[in-house]
Amino acid sequence: MIAIVMNSPEEGAGLFEEILRRSGYPYSVFEAYRGERFAAEEMDAILIMGGPMSANDDLDFIHWELKLIREAVERNIPFLGVCLGCRLLAKALGGNVYEAPVKKVGVYTIKLTVDGLRDYCFSGLDLEIPVFQWHGETYTLPEGCVRLAEGKLVKEQAFRYLDRFYGLQFHVEITPEMASKWVKKLGNRGTEVLEDFNRYYPEMRQIAEHIFTRFLGIVERC
View 1: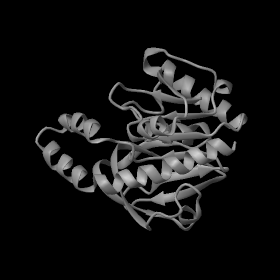
View 2: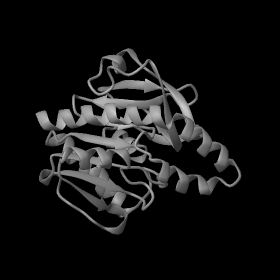
View 3: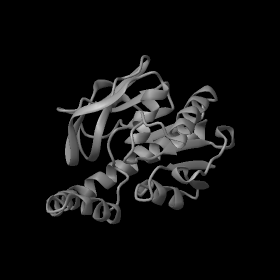
View 4: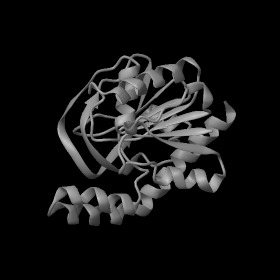
């Protein structure tokens, strides 16, 4: 069983959930912000998705998720964190989470590192890939972690700890339906952002398929 942890009603697993349904791998969705909980040892893998809150917020479900991540690491349970989930992983591993120099909203190009090009989940992707960003915080790379991708204004974009714990600062799981809802918060700028998203969506969908299918390969081997 794979657990999908949601921190907001608008930020589900999107394409990742589509891939899970197609693969037939059993999964359950937990709305952590509504108090839904589970034990790490009950799961084969854990996904923590995004949300508008900070990894530093004094919220019960944020504290629970940090504890959950540490238990997953102790038990070698594969983990994938997206956006807020990425920063929670960084904090759980000893990194610092803080306000980014700029707030990024929209499609941006990031560059894979040498380690990223060799990584199991990222190898086979282009050196530079488009991803959808929606974040105002960043993190310091925790000790012992490997940087997999970086950006120009916000350097930290993806990292791995050991061989099965991944953090993605960006969104490739986002679907057109999700994007249409998100951009309503942007007012007039939303139209431009959505047009940009739709232009790059076919490529970003392929990237999501590549990364998450590889991640499921890790889960199946563990």
